[in-house]
Length: 134
Image 1 (tube, helix red, strand yellow):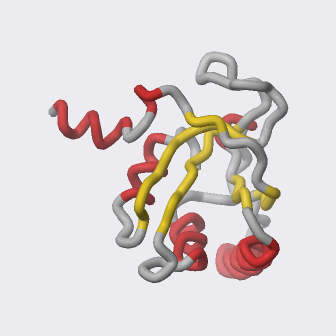
Image 2 (cartoon, one colour):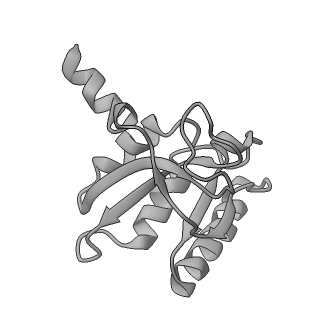
């Protein structure tokens, strides 16, 4: 979904999303930063109320929100990090369904969640802060 600023804004507006935090995950560099990202990908940690919005709805929103058929460098890769076997299965099923609708290979990776490092404070809710300054 490219830079994490837009996707954070995209998800944080959904009913049932309690909190979003941008950060870095999926790599081996310890304590990555924006200027020393290493092999991590910019990601969003989404806290949600499953009574209001389902994981499936978040997955649908994810695939509707970007072109998952585009090749991206590691920093901006399309990746879903799952936290359970159920989430993994839902992510795989949704990816396969989406692939049938676009009739192209979907390059989204589906990987087990690893350590999530929150990004620096100035990156958090960047677009919402920018709107307030206008």
